[in-house]
Amino acid sequence: MVQKPIVIDAGSNLSTAKAQKIPMESSVTGGLAEGEVHWFIVDLKKGTRIIAEVEGIRNGSAFFDTHLELFDPLGKSVQVSDDSPFTHQDSLIEFVALVDGA
Figure 1 (cartoon, rainbow, N blue to C red):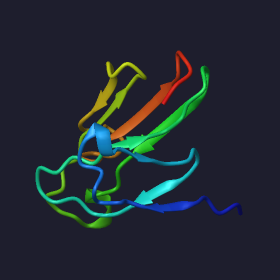
Figure 2: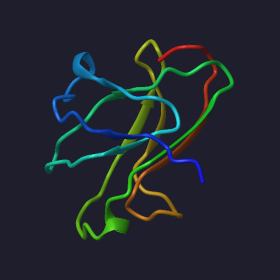
Figure 3: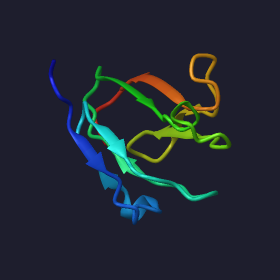
Figure 4: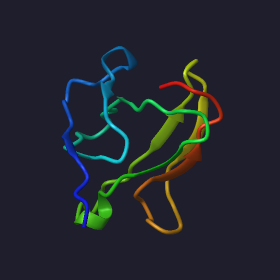
């Protein structure tokens, strides 16, 4: 079994200007306070498939309702997930990059 890198959420990535760069095929671990938004950057090449999910309620956080949003290199929202039929209140995004960029 291949171990994927685990990245510690910096906690200071509270704006797009302070977004934390993370490698592909990694997991991020950390915590969120109510109403907090953490920003991350992933460098995608055109045609690259990415799956991003949050495990909150499935880890026992009873009232943890997450939201994921994916932006293109120009800052336009390209996909949003609030709840998923597969993960309930935990967000899940599956996306194929249409252009190169972070």
